[in-house]
Amino acid sequence: MRLRPTRGTAAAGLLLAASVVYNDWVLQFFLPTGLHQRDSYVSELFAADQPYRILFSLVESACAALVVTGGALAWSVLPGGRASAGCAATVAFGVFSIADVLLPLHCAPSVERGCPEGSPWHTTTSGMVHFALFASMALFITAARRGNPPLEIVRRWGPWLLAVSMTAAILTVGPFFGHPGGHGLAQRIHLTSVGVWFALLAVAIFRYGAEDGRRDAECVDSQHHSQL
Image 1 (cartoon, rainbow, N blue to C red):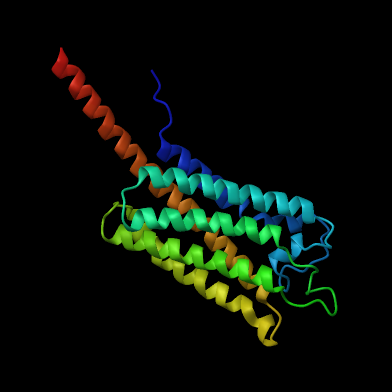
Image 2 (tube, helix red, strand yellow):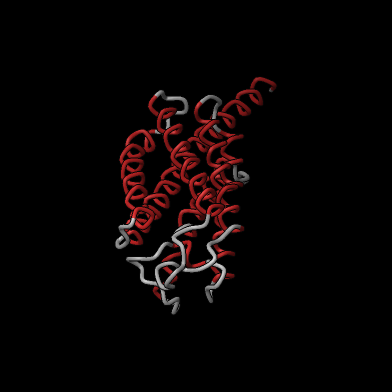
């Protein structure tokens, strides 16, 4: 008899899917968006006046839904403390990402003269997205280092990903200080690192859930034999 997928497996699957969908900017290689990968923000793809705004808005929203659901399921699997806080921050990341889509840029500053680099609302939601992301990464890494839960792959590689992701994110703010150019490349490095983080977290949660499922199965089997 096959065992039903555990919540850990479901959470891992959703986060793994999110790791791929989150990098929807690769669609620029196949669509004539008119935006340069090196010098445009990814959020320009779903700016209010862009031709593919509906497509990219839907993909971004779908990714956010995957993260929220995956984070919520992981919350029910992982132990309390910093791991639970990390799950909560992951869910918040997804919620803020939806807000980011609902409050888009009005135009694409990299190709439209006179278009501001950002709007107050979109800049705020983007800041909240980054805060929730880095908080979740830091919380999971701290929990893994303490061994509660013992997410070895997060403990080993998480700090490196956090450093790369945060550095790349900082390098995207040049246009706001009068130094445009290259920020699109930096952002895409950041997004790739976040995708790798979700994949890493998915593997860690899957392994933890599988181990937890084996312990439950052994407990049930032990109780069954004791009743015979």
